[in-house]
Image 1 (cartoon, helix red, strand yellow):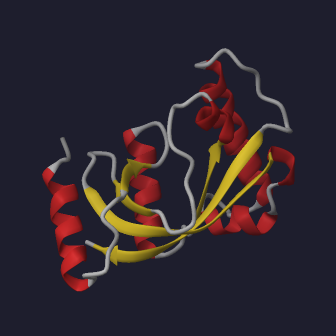
Image 2 (cartoon, helix red, strand yellow):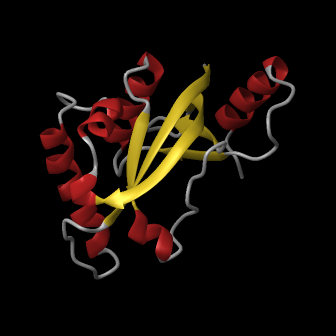
Image 3 (cartoon, one colour):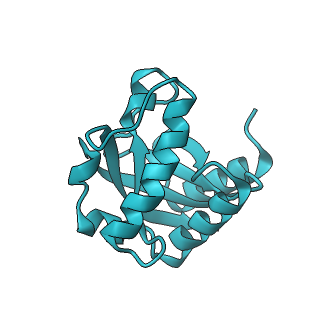
Length: 152
């Protein structure tokens, strides 16, 4: 069952955008309430316009691969809907080929590639442990760009 904040935000969005698609994904960034809150705030501020995910998890069926045109309801750490973003592009690249531009667009930390690599290596290692796989610098990474189309 979808929570009330998701329904309310979606209904408000549909009123100003009657051509809105029928389907959307609702999700929070990261693996903790604090991370979800922090990254949702960056999205609302316009600093975060990209994200990265571990392609291997899509291969094992843990989620659906994003695609250009996908509408996403961004949730905070309490699972409250805070914004609607549309995926503008998706590219799958090896971890060690993620660009400095993509790291910057993710909007996290000091926005450098080095920061991105350190944080995501640790994050992906934890995710891979849950499916008994090891991290390496060639794992495929889903680099997704998005634009906010509606804010609470």
